[in-house]
Length: 350
Image 1 (cartoon, helix red, strand yellow):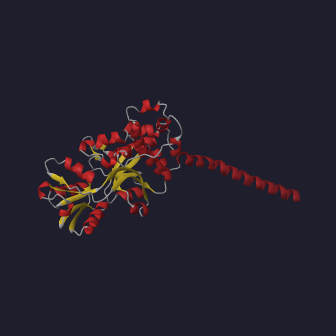
Image 2 (image 1 turned 90 degrees about the vertical axis):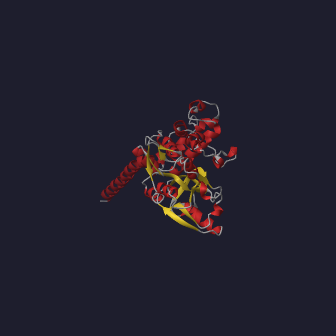
Image 3 (image 1 turned 30 degrees about the horizontal axis):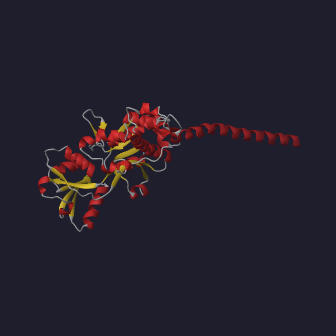
């Protein structure tokens, strides 16, 4: 009897050990799969072979379809650079035009993987909305535009004016606080989209229009017959760029370091045309940047050619600027490299 009970216990133990080993064997591939990227967003992007990127779609120089329907601009190319880093192909992007009111919900809900929509980096957006600014691709500020014949040369002359504003943007708050701080009065005229805001301003429904200085400068350049004046004041500092959801650190890392790679390439003189030649350089820094040495890509969950793909297919930051913003007459200003007196710099890629 004792021998029989011992046999039963040994058999039961064997079953438990077998179940444990079987469970371990089943769990192992899942662990390896998670370790492949470590990012739910990157996994989803890879599975569909497509990056879904939220943009404005109506912002000259940043995101606006050309005559062939191709999305063009700094923000659009930021999306393409991330696609090149994540998937090896900058063309694998679907652009989703989003209103100011819909942009954050679209990112929070997973409708888009990435938001690059002239969106300012603020404490509230990170602390309350569950979002993170992964990379600043442009340093901007709120400004005012008026008709040249209005006789206004300073924003301080706008006491009592009506101001066209995009509803749901940080510009609303910037303007309200600036007028209050300067003991001036104004009447806001709110609109839901950029196109209707600029149409209302041109139709004299308001005395001035407040928006990002970059957008207003681009708009003024597109209206040579409108006789518009950009007032000199910049009433806020607005760093804008690429936003991601909180909770996916690996995706945050990839987006941030893709932006850093575009700046590092400019600093090192690496362009879309000479990236292959530079990759053969004896410079260890260039070899790491372009994937000839080290495992920077593997650390991010992507191919080691991630940065090389982004630069070769989209260009370094200077190339992107010259293609999209220089034709609008925008000076780089604060968006120059730090070595040239600007605010743009890349942490060490090592």
